[in-house]
Image (cartoon, helix red, strand yellow):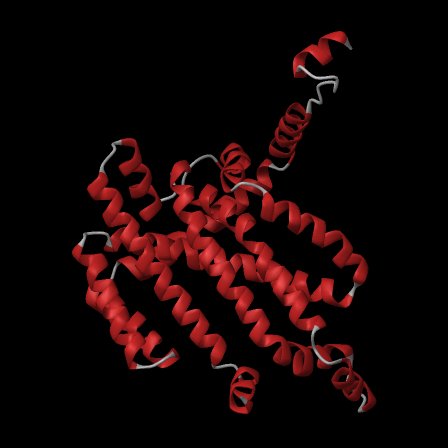
Length: 294
């Protein structure tokens, strides 16, 4: 007891929390090693495929396709701005790194939404699940981003998969929260009207709750995308390819020029993802109806 008190320098005895977590991670790694190998293989295959789609075609082809998406989502101003922004990224020789980063962001966002949206719907429909999920999300959102990298490196070593898993864990929370919030905000009288006409719970969810909650769910998707981009850059510390690796390299070499070019490419990519995802949210029927009433 005296030694424990001396360890902390206070009257509070030393709590070996770090040793407990270390032991738990070692046990999980040893016990579920085949599962992690399978996850690593699947994620590597998905990332390689997506990266090939984005990086193999010539720059102008990919830029025009992404600009066409922006034009369809918002209009010619966003489409033209996209072409100019991507031209700047190519001009500072960061196009290949930007496509690596975009592949990681898209894949991490997809995984986070596949896991997060059903969990948010479940939490909205069951208060017991909500009471369990909320403190977990609070914990995840307040945890420093760098902490997510430690267990993922232990389990998945370095490379894109470690960065991908850490990004999913970091970015999933807004998808869960805003999905639950959107479902809960649907007018109870509308839901009761659906039940009065004999609709099942599944049909009420598909045809009433999700469509009405779509603007809020899309806001969550927007946040997941932007958090994924920020975490993918941090994941350059554990060998994730793309702009994050360039930022880390510029920091290690104190290379101001490289840091400025990679940082500018990150900003332009973030603007593109934010504007396009926000514009897609505005195209939802409920969002259009709300806009028409203003």
